[in-house]
Length: 329
Image (cartoon, rainbow, N blue to C red; front, top):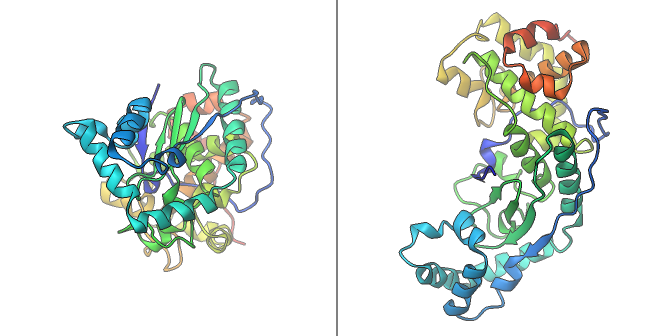
């Protein structure tokens, strides 16, 4: 079982469109999966003492360990006291009520997760079926993901109308913290666990690594809009599609595709509001989007299977066989 605590910024890389039309792939069947749901925050906020909270934590050790980092506390009673202080805080009560309103109905999320893990189990036999646990912890943590357990800090994902939002988070990243982005974020994490790094550490190779991840994620959630997978606005998606040849020309003319500098990689693959080297309006992480476009074209031209794509670590070969060269519009 692979487990990790997720911060949203680390996942939102790559995409290729705004359309929500479903992508077909005969290679992937849909296994029947049922995702059990545990509304743990509702149990927590009904408790009135630290002793009751400590008992709840003992009954939910994975939540205490993976989401609350219980091992960092000398004793569970100290963590329980901290949680008691959180749930009795008036501001957190507001956060809880807003989270309950935003996540009153979880069925759209569970349906997407059932699609995701049904396809994962078809493509990768042995993949588990996770429980979905929801929590409110005063913006302490946002996500924990594995193929046996998913914990969502729903207070992070209330959306634009939230009275309280994650601190020290830029506005261009905050817009991703809503329930519409959740299934896409989980899909990208699960897809990323299946992708091996390319043989080389060039900018181009890492662009294609991200491209593989987002190609797979888009096939695991075939009806999810690419704008959600990427975390771009519809306007940003339109802009990059209309200027794909200009974006590509920047990489080619500046001879940076085979750069190995971490500074250069961060410039085109890391979190930034804009890639100013291309344009004041070019959104961050643009290199990953180009990587996805290369992978899409490679898959179309070679008729490779997803498993063949994952197994191919020679990203230079993928690039050459893709024939990627966008034309001016």
